[in-house]
Length: 156
Image 1 (tube, one colour):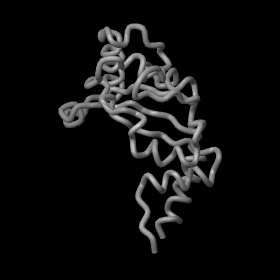
Image 2: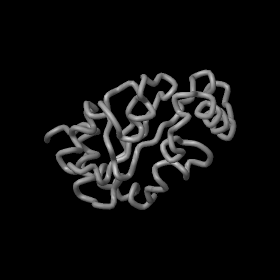
Image 3: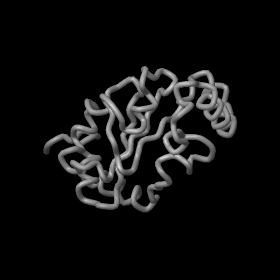
Image 4: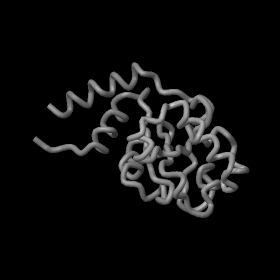
C-alpha cells in the first residue's frame, strides 16, 4: 500500500469534497508560492477557490507583510477566501496557562501597536472574536468532520 503524507491527504479530501476548504498554515517569513502544501493543492484547485492561508509567526514578519497579506507583490497569493495573520502564543504563555481571552487581547494590541499593520484592513488580521478575519468566511464543522472520516478511511 502506498504511504500518503498529510499534505496529500488534505488534497484527497479537497478533491473529493467540494465543500472542504484547505487551511494552509504558513509562517510570515515564507514565500507563500513556494509552500509545499500550496504547490500540492494547486494541482486540484488551480484558482485557489477553496484555500485559505493562516499566516503564523506574524511577530517575525518580513518587510512588505501588509501587501503580502492582501495578495499583493512577490511571494504572495491572492486567494478568494483570503489570508489572515495570527499571532502565535509563546511557550511561556502556554506554560503559564494564560487565558484565551487574554491572548486575544494581546494579539489585538500587537496589531494595533505595530506600524507594519497600520494600513492592513481588519479582515486580514485575526482580531476580536475571529469572525472578522478570513473575509467573513467560516468552515462548517460538519465539513471538517466529513473530511476527518475520509482521512481515516485513506489511512486504513
